[in-house]
Length: 110
Image 1 (cartoon, rainbow, N blue to C red):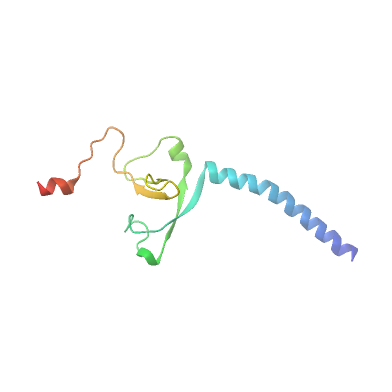
Image 2: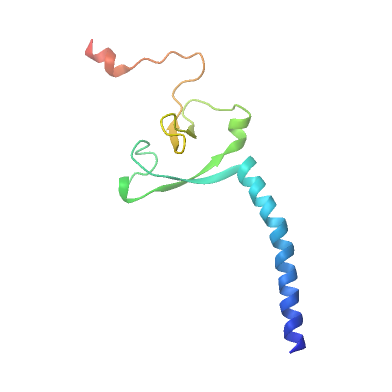
């Protein structure tokens, strides 16, 4: 009986040490380096979520690139929705600061 209690104490001690090291490391990593997000909806099809509403894709969001302002045309970015601040949206960058963007659909109608 004493030996089984020793094993349980040893296990709990090792678990607590690992837990108190792993949690701060994981939180820091998810806040500063990268995090995982799920993409739902049709706005990024066919690149992401090609199955439509039946499926969703999982992406890794790189925080380093954004912090260093290394965003380029064609990159996919995640941001807070201007219409609903509780919602995050995902979009592809088509222009950078100083670029002029024209709506091709409006030009065709003219």
